[in-house]
Length: 359
Image (cartoon, rainbow, N blue to C red):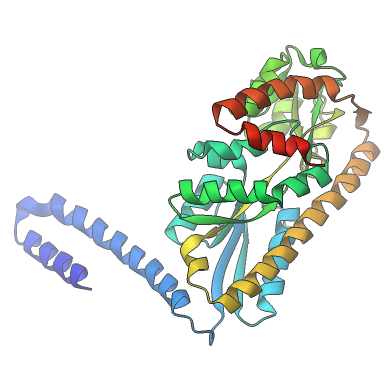
């Protein structure tokens, strides 16, 4: 409180001089900022000092606005399981406090959220390059392989790196998924040569972009909300995503989204992050309860995406999409060159080999 009284005194003195109007305005803004920080701090202190008599209030958020998405299924399971104990009160936000991952992590750091779901791509943009391991295409053979890797010591290693390089701000408490991605566009692709010269909506930097460029495609940036129109108006020749995401957006109903080639190039990984000081201030009993809830939520999210893969594939076929299976070996061979180069650059060659050896 001393700092508020000092600022107030400063403002009073500034008002006595007509030459201090700018200073007064600036200090008012500083005062408002400090009051906001104090409010956040009080909320954190309330949870930190919680002796178990009151439920711990947590805000959990993801960026999908679809209320039936697998992300939402997982978050609601987290809420349900944790709240059964009477020790937690969890508020779930489906895109309502941010549809951009930068916003979500910013809220996590500043105290506006306690648990958020983000992609590895966000971590790399934040300077944590090692997490791009999980963005390497054709890294995983199937969902079983993916689960064995992320739930093993390899997943723990990446989680530890993220904790350390985030400045000990947040923990990775679980790995979720956004499905397996396939090519879809104005024509099917059966070999890497078929992608040459095609403009594909995908990441325009990093290992994903490197792969598509290596087989002759042209990575192109298009906002997700604008992709339907981009496919319909020939801005791009195709895109890549999982059935549970491309079908609800009706991309398969456009001229440049009708052909879905099951390249299965990316068994995606998503990171469930929790604010470190919130977790650290919990009692052992509270941690045990929340760990159980996180495990159940993780299984619920994974089961939802696995189930929806088939459901949305069937819907795409019913809607007239043309789907072809692909011999992925030539694509995988191109991807392995990029994998090796990336692993050598980031000192992750042994980890990459561990993943390849995991059966």
